Image (cartoon, rainbow, N blue to C red; front, side, top):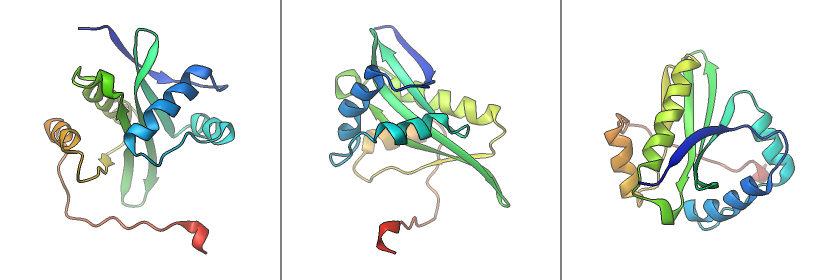
Length: 149
């Protein structure tokens, strides 16, 4: 098995490695996704309640996951977002290690509940999430773009 290390991506300035990884991985998550601008990426990595986790293999980022958390009257919650593993590195347990790392960080932050969404077609991801203790909940997610105001 190849050596894989998971660590938080602490980016104070954008690196070519991170930008290249986002350029390559985001379209694998969803074909229409593009890498955000440098300004947006700096805001993401500078937000104390948002962390990017990266899986590295042979000096390259092969997987990413974002964890964002907040506190509201109903409790402390976190969302796992943008989980993607490079197609060439799938089947090595990278997604599981990324999710486990995010869960551990959420627990360390005192977060009571971690949630995520996943497109219906992502069956392998669903199996992983169930294996890791996530359960489907009886809820409906609504979304609306704000540029329509």
